[in-house]
Image (cartoon, rainbow, N blue to C red; front, side):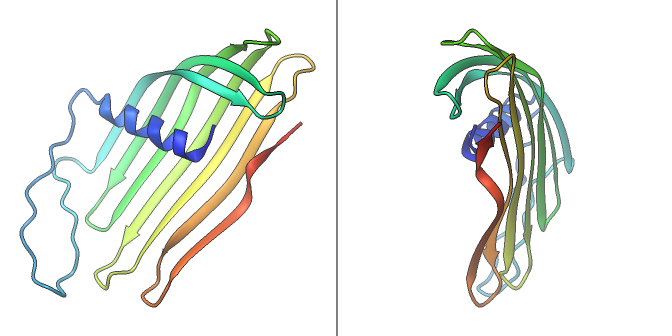
Length: 166
């Protein structure tokens, strides 16, 4: 499961909030004034939502229909925004092998903004697709950081976003 799929899942979890936060109006600012984010309401959301979909195992090309629960915690302030997502009891059966798969995902996303226009965004992803028997497992662990430091854009990835089969 790619980080973009995880971002979509996080978005779905947030959309499932029983009491969504309504953004407060933001006053107009003059050119050169610091950027401020006013998201209104409490600065912490805790969401649990059902999760279902299809997973592709790059280790054997198998499609797996998975279902379970995802949990997201969102915290924000005027200059930061953080999301932590993890899965719980997400499992499925492989369409070809009939193998039982378990999906374990934790993802931490963070964004920070400053009044001088600089910002940074980071994604820390840990995915483990554990299959039963001799069916290969898939694991991906990586961190991606990008942003603007005031003079240039930067992007850096550590770990292996393509994952490995074991």
